[in-house]
Length: 63
Image (cartoon, rainbow, N blue to C red):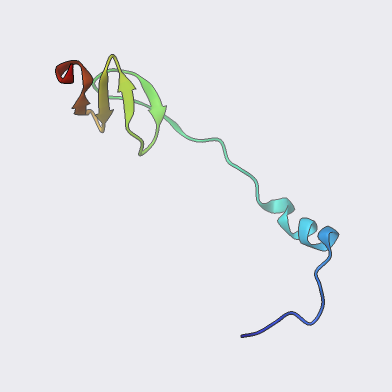
């Protein structure tokens, strides 16, 4: 395997990483409940787990 010839300094490493920034997550509104949630994520609303407008888990029936 290849090995670096010299140690990369913290300053040089951090200069390279300045362009890596966290982007704000996109927010969507659920089609059935109107609840705001992050894209491609399931979300809870009134005891039910929704994903893409469909109920995955109904916590009220389990009890």
